[in-house]
Amino acid sequence: EDQVTQSPEALRLQEGESSSLNCSYTVSGLRGLFWYRQDPGKGPEFLFTLYSAGEEKEKERLKATLTKKESFLHITAPKPEDSATYLCAVQARDSSYKLIFGSGTRLLVRP
Amino acid sequence: KAGVTQTPRYLIKTRGQQVTLSCSPISGHRSVSWYQQTPGQGLQFLFEYFSETQRNKGNFPGRFSGRQFSNSRSEMNVSTLELGDSALYLCASSPRTERTGELFFGEGSRLTVL
Image 1 (cartoon, helix red, strand yellow):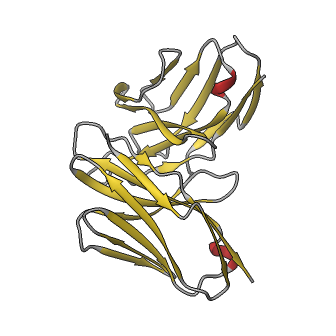
Image 2 (image 1 turned 135 degrees about the vertical axis):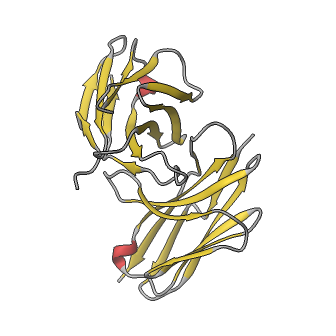
């Protein structure tokens, strides 16, 4: 069964304190792995797509990497506005285009 | 350009009632997906519509249904509501190109069942 597990569930950082979020996945053929950010009361906002092991994507203070079993979202020198829930999702290489989401990591960055 | 619009944003129903939620995708987007988000189960796929046809359906009972109109707008319906149906229902659209995992989500319809 396709599955996504994210850790930690919650993470508290001081402003400027870099860290990484983990996303482990099991999927029968990966079409793509996706990172989303969700603010309270809002829908998820797309951040990155990764398609194959070794691929990396960067956007401002965020960098996403992918291996054959997991993905990391590295946050460098975070700011309070980076506080949000970060969701990881996979899409299997089958006829379905559905996303299978992990439960997310709640990130709080304190000033 | 305008984002995905969902109505209503909040609603309260009682057990046994039915509810219809509406979604207007981004102009030009032909694929609309629906997801249920709860604290316990997270985000779970309900169904996807493309060109007025349901392409995929998640593991939800038949009480959950939907449709898509010729202008790509979509509705989902939940009949005989149960307490466990209380959730945030999210609609997402995409142009249904090769980057189909890049979804644009609305802000959701928060349903409370009493």
